[in-house]
Amino acid sequence: MQTVIVQTGNEEYALPVESVVSIEKLEYITPIPHLPDYLLGLMKARGELVPILDFSQILYHKPTSRNEESHVVVLATDKLQIGLLVLDAKEILELPDERLTSTALKAYSKTPYFTTVANLENRVITVIDPNLLASSLAGMDEISDYMKEQSQSS
Image 1 (cartoon, rainbow, N blue to C red):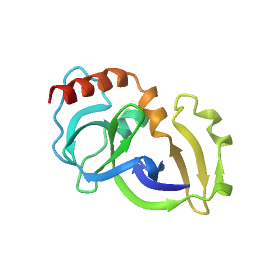
Image 2: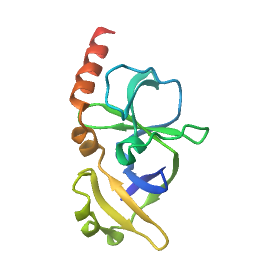
Image 3: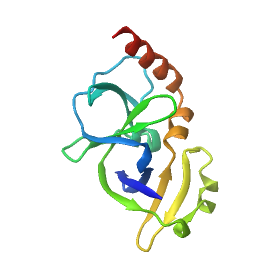
Image 4: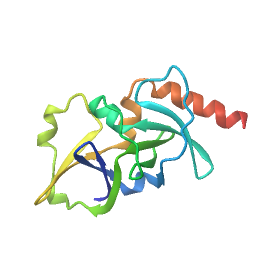
């Protein structure tokens, strides 16, 4: 499985490379009031407005510290494109199928978007399904509707 490795907190996560549209430097995010804490607002990425989700806020209820290493990974999901704010987008890595296991995920019932874990020699990397992430977060339907309205009015 070909993945893009991102860092949030002290942990590494893998995103399937076929879902990754681009990796962007963090630009100005236009805040939108009355959104869930994890949704920072909208950012322009490659000419498109993309809702930016703070991955650390989703996982740990702590905002991602923003610095020159911060990146936004733009992901294509079934519903819409989303941007995931992460500490760092580190590398593209092939995760061998024989190193993937889902037995460790039984404890993660609150995170249905964790699909498997790569148990490598000196690191453990959790694989994220962007579609499950986008569909399981509270408020994403409203964001999707809002984005459709924006694209129709422009």
